[in-house]
Image (cartoon, rainbow, N blue to C red; front, top):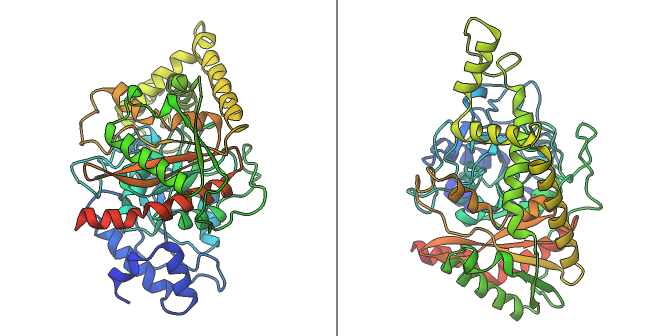
Length: 477
């Protein structure tokens, strides 16, 4: 089997090939290492130089390598969160989820580029340069997990880890034409993830198909005593198999699926075509309402920066990371943070500090928390009548590099359809469902807390009906 053939396999197919003796884990790793080393998308910030230790016999992931977002600590390997303030930082420990996946047989292939401290929707905020979209190198891959998404879409990684705070797995998955899953908050340990907004951050898989997402997630969910927010997952993640949606009730919220809220016509056309496919598979589709969803973005951009201003206070030049001497303690603090943080990170620190300040806490932070509760209540009410809520993933296809960097509000609006699920802490998946102007579109499906197995089953059925791989092949022919 040639190196090109090897990297065309899905991760699950590669596991099967290794277990049947048709492929060796070493051969697979070398093929992907060569692909990652030749990366022209700036998707990688570090690539393994040496072959990993042999995977233990019977390891369920069989040696299929893993690309990991720069936000995860990896012992002895640069873990920089896309920021100059952590440039070259090599932590003395490894994030729990990365260690669990390595133990299951997924060795570290490389660390992927990202928006600095996961703050961005385009992967243009990285201190190490923007990531390019493999579908069109003049366009963004989405963010903040843009490097992970681009690597998987380009075939330089079989699968990857990302993080999702307000859509940072799902949105780049949609823009790059792959699958991205945000699990229920608390099901995957955050220990060793460099924090942005601790009540929202969650690790998840970016993969070529839904089966791979389920397989990787199966070995990610776990209770971790080192993470106070970790609650684990009841039962086991199953590999999806059903190609029917018989009896499934899908709710379509007007508040998140209408051209009037800024969703492109081509995105809506693909979304509606997917709804018609869902009906053919046996689903019933009705309008539902999430009345507080239009306020989600405003609440998110109070809550997330507030938590960021607290979490990023630790980067002061004293304990780790960059340190800029200036003849005194205050000067060292000031210059280290001024030169170490990028513009978007500084913007969010200032926004967060302001909303937490005396006299403004109740008006901003307290009110945003109440909106968050209302949004969670809206979803609970919707799930009393519907199995899943479905929306477009992103309001637009991948936009051109630089198109929105001077307009923060326009950039923030890219998260309009994904932020409500993050605030509610519920699982949500994006699958590729079509093309608009030759670029991928995404379909988002979310369910109640801990409904990952049912979400994956429904997403798999739709994936089989959509046949995106064939659409992509024709588009690139």
